[in-house]
Length: 220
Length: 228
Image (cartoon, rainbow over all chains, first blue to last red):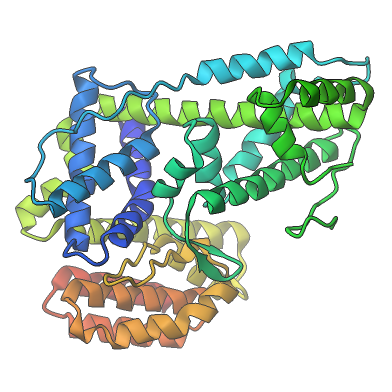
């Protein structure tokens, strides 16, 4: 299990690093913040989180990618204002989002849905869950981040825009603001739901084949 | 029939942000339209899955990080190695990635040949594997765009090669670290687009230019050995 824990930490460390360095260097590109500075901040954050976890000052189910990005932006900002190095994490705002409340709302809605005998009960279908998991895994960036920050992080479009670096859209780099996040989220969700529906249809779990809607809103 | 606005409508209903009239209309439609109902079920399944998977991933990471000891963490992030070798954190992490990734790449390459036994397309596969596993975000300063090759298609990489070439050949004014990153990124981009000869040229250049840096030049030699 020790090796597995290390593998998990290493995987996350490497996975979050590109977004983190890109975001900070973008935000402070007109300053003297260097790649080495950003790497040091990134390492310091992991050391500090590790300590806080050991001291039970932070919960394991924290929304880690947004947490790390926020701390990073904050530390870079303070470094630029020359407020000195930080050995400990600044206390961030409490995450009041309770994912249980959303999942409860979903369960309540499903229970209250009118249904006929031939309505598929996909929610308790193990195969449907597995197909969904597969499609979530294959959701590309920035969709994966935007969707996760929306539904798990319960963040506003403006907050999400602050944590997403520029991304390629139709071959060009798109600036990220609240409006762009909102537009992108619906494209991402439409695409994800289409893929999930297609997987469910191909598996025979639902009997309605989805129709692909193009970006311009027309049917594919 | 999937309406392009359904997703937003479903979300508004989920968040209880519809007006009373719209909410009634939505619920009437749910009762009357089986396809609409199925679409809504799939939407709810998807959102529920997003939340549960995110939570599971976060718990897994938080638990893992809370359970490893400090020396293991310092080893993972390259802090401990930097202190002993005197290298900058970013340099040690780069070498650590290359060492680890090259070993994995070697194992996977051997595995692929023994299982598939295909030589014809083997060269192309090695190139893609090496490029994917040696990928790292080449981050520039002064507003240069970051490049993560594994997220781009072959065609997209071909389109950005001119800018990568410019960055590499103009990187003389940047510090040594930037030059190395620019060079490796260009070499990997050539590999992804199956221009092995060009990739080898760059790697040879890097190996000789930075011969004083034994670790870096050794890594360049290792990649060149794979390509042979």
